[in-house]
Length: 64
Image (cartoon, rainbow, N blue to C red; front, top):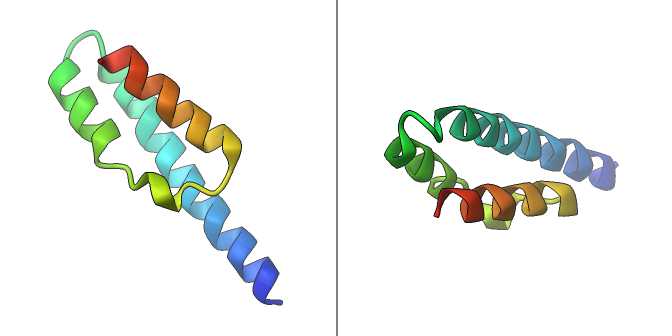
C-alpha cells in the first residue's frame, strides 16, 4: 500500500513539473527570463522518473 501511495505521489509531482516545463518551453522565445525562473523553481530532488529528470535537464540546457 505504501509503495502505491509513493508511486501516485511521485507521478503527481512529475506531472506538475512537466506542466511547468511545457510552460517554460512556450515562454522561451518571448520571455526567456520567465522561462529560466520557472525551470529553476522546480525541485529536482522531487522528480521521481528518469524521463522527468531528463526533461528538466534538457529544458535547463536549452534556456541557458
